[in-house]
Length: 127
Image (cartoon, rainbow, N blue to C red; front, side, top):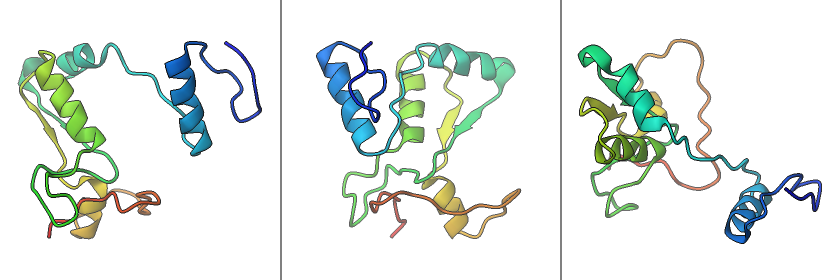
């Protein structure tokens, strides 16, 4: 690990990972490392026939729209895909259009919610 600048306090040394980390930090995002135990954790959570629903802020959809003709990718869709492709349980779903879509639909929440979908129009609309 090397320290080059206060915005980049400890960067990994391999060049591709260094550049990835630098770009994330430059855009105000803390980079994360993949969870190598993700599928095993999903398998454990779904033991006994339980299902799991993945949700993220902006959500995604497989349905085409004007802004996203091939559908809209999201963290929750990627999580479901990863679980299914890597041999995880089949009882996994994603929350179509995410928490933001739930909020837009006026569905009930426990607690308060303030939409924060970022600077770009990344929320999939159902139109």
